[in-house]
Length: 387
Image (cartoon, rainbow, N blue to C red; front, side, top):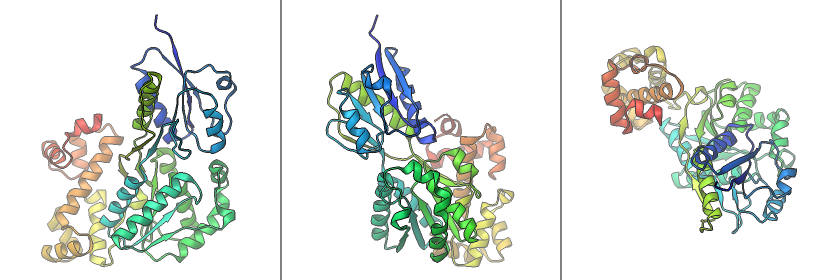
């Protein structure tokens, strides 16, 4: 009988990011019948649990947010994989979401919607937030865009204890409201994570700012519960957390087999998941705004280019010129982009049949929808849904 390998798992499973990592570890563990996963799901990881101190594990996969915990884990003398990335060291491989690609997705999304004013709202001094802010500044400089960065007073900074700061978030919204009122409008804001995005949305409501018409907000992590509880619901960038968990388990297996592993691993996010907080177009021309709203309205999902032009009161050639000037694409491409976006959301989040999805997204038939979808994504709708 093969000896049981005990793997400790210190990951905050109270949020979607941590739960996704746990799923990824579990998926790998399904292929290793000799592995026994010992999970410890405390929301605040500053101390080692007693069972871990007694040396009952062969390896440890952990979310290590500070040096204090990093030192204690290092002293255990067992193979470790860090799924946070702040406390890098040569002896503990670390995995983190790729900040550069997260910001690239946000920039592409904002620019496609026609925004001229861009802003970032994070937690100064928090590792992942500072990474994303630096990438935001860098990409803004490359694009020639002026950006606005939220910089709270020192008393409003999170420091090492992000959990405690987030719990006190109601006290932070007054400062956010002042910053939001002073921003040029319309403005698109990337929040460093979904909790920060929720705070921005609440501060906008406090400041009497219209969302998404004046302020468009995009979070990171795609924690569905947090995003759906926001009003308006929060759009978010979805990280590939199951891949992070799966890779962590693979690196652990390699270390246990005494194989060399790289010190740093960056995992790109999956996609932007759109909800109400970004459902707008920031064009300055009123006809473009009117037409774009019609295209985004599910009640007009079946509207043709000609029907959109008629409702907007202009000819097709005029509307195409306006869309090219303000959004960089003609009307027909905007219609197909929105239909594809809507169909992806329905495939991900509902059990509707392909015929029902085709009807809701304005396609004449399920056959045409499948052909269109595969042409644009490289996958059939069923393959996309399974993936």
